Length: 407
Image (cartoon, rainbow, N blue to C red; front, side, top):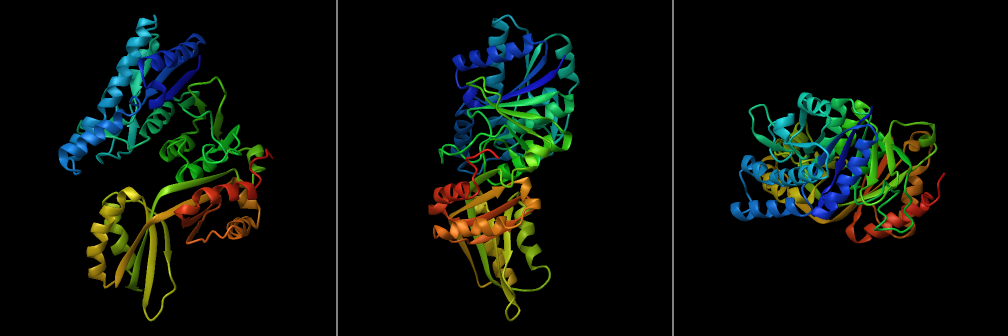
């Protein structure tokens, strides 16, 4: 008997009819002789409504503990409705919230990290023959306060539960039927991948691909959980995310990702001496602002410029923090640019193939797309460009590496 964890997103459970359709899929897995744990997001649009209510009530600055109590309620609705439907269809089911499981997290409200999952209660209910339905996105800290894992956190919940249960695999059901070489809504030549390595999926997710949350991929890699990305609206087998194998190594570049949620910050004419970078980036880290790409210009007369990127949603908080810091360290000014995007190519084959970077830059140059920043790793190259060239850059790079064709 296999243990399967299935996660369904908000569009999959958007109304009662869709909940019934998902329930039929879950029942098929159960009747196949499997123990099934289902992790659900809130119904489509519900979390956004709750966030808007919190912002309206607080003027945009909610108490974060109470914010988590509010926005986590969406999943309570979806799991209870789902369990009601399953029971009505003649299958024993029980819904469990994050604090009941327990999914224990740190104390960072709004973006908590999972410390551990106590699966004792889930295992007990599975032994009784029940389908266990768990609220995604939420957990509880050591003091019993409700926490949430950030947007996309239900993916992370599902993989964490699968890892703790030592499940045979985890299925992530979404409104797309797998992982593509790029966003199929952006380019009709995008090709669905049969499988992709953890590292490549992590690279694509971190570069802006919305199919899986990066933290869920990290957990899957650490604990070796095979993850299938599938559509809840078809029977397609989807894409397997797993450990790298020989077939995967033949792909020099596996995909092109883009991220429009980027803003560029340049701190101009700062003293080039030890401690300056720490004085800039430590306050950002302390306020949970993630810095992505960083470039420091060559020093001139004891001064330099520092350029880095942050999420657009964090730009106002970053501005508040950095404007004061700039005065303290003697920077002449700070420039902010929200009219940018990041495009990236990802592939394990980059490690053993030279000339990938030059090929990427040449392809962009041929279409007069200027590169503002560059970041590289063993399996990923990212470029910051003007936002207006995003779609063109994706198509150009997809064609340059022949991703339409299966290698």
